[in-house]
Image 1 (tube, rainbow, N blue to C red):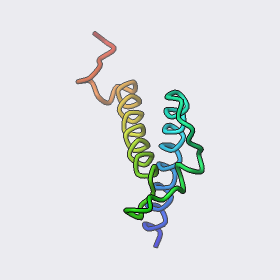
Image 2 (tube, rainbow, N blue to C red):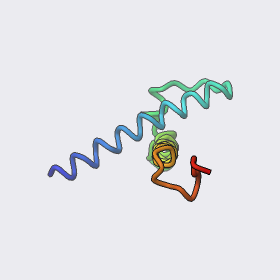
Image 3 (cartoon, helix red, strand yellow):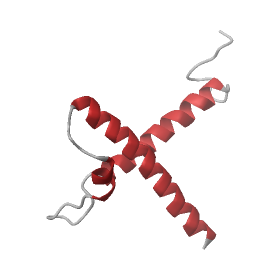
Image 4 (cartoon, rainbow, N blue to C red):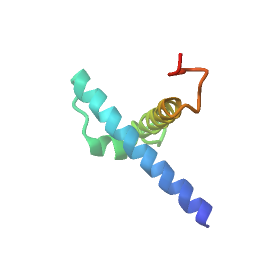
Length: 85
């Protein structure tokens, strides 16, 4: 049960991070999309959330990028960047 709880919480956190990034992207592009639409709008044809899957994968990509950057800065990934050279 605890593992299921962790998966749900992680998906929600990743979804909200991605939704925030997607909202910023749409505001820069000039599209009139609200945060609630990103989280809740359902496509009538397919029945899935219209923007949420994009936000989820954007959040996953962003967190992977953050982990790679932080691990590289900490010296755990010397193949990408070695500050001693």
